[in-house]
Every structure is written in C-alpha cells, then in structure tokens.
Image (cartoon, rainbow, N blue to C red):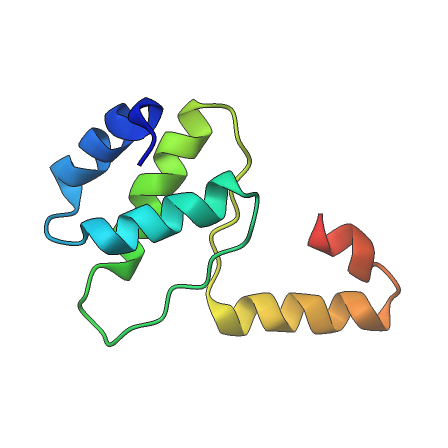
Length: 90
C-alpha cells in the first residue's frame, strides 16, 4: 500500500479493527474513482466503515453519497423516468 495512505489507514484503524484487507480494497476503489457497494451479514461494521471513510473524504473536500441500496435504486429509477438519469449519476 502506498505510504501516503498510512495516515488514512491509521485514522480508519482507530475505529475499524481487524478489517484491514477490506479497508485496503475500499481505498483502492475510491482512489480509482470507482464506486463501492458494501455487502455482508448484519453487524459486521459496514455502516461504521462507510461513515469513517465518508468523514475522512469530506475533510479532504471530496463529495460523498451515503445511501441504502433500496433508496438509491428508487432514486435512479425515478431519474430514468424523468430523463435526469445522467445528472443523478454525477
């Protein structure tokens, strides 16, 4: 992992313990400007991880969208119907 990410990993590991491989994959996706869908059984820290990384991203002046999958799909379906789909994806 890039040494420049050490401070970010250190911040995350203060909150998320024992999930380093997941955190590293999450960071790779974000750095490649990809999207991330977290999926796992209840109680495994998905929301905590998303909140932690979202706060770090906001402090670095990045935009963040945190949404439940069902709500996001509903928004995208509505956007497709009213021809604002491309705008909604930005």
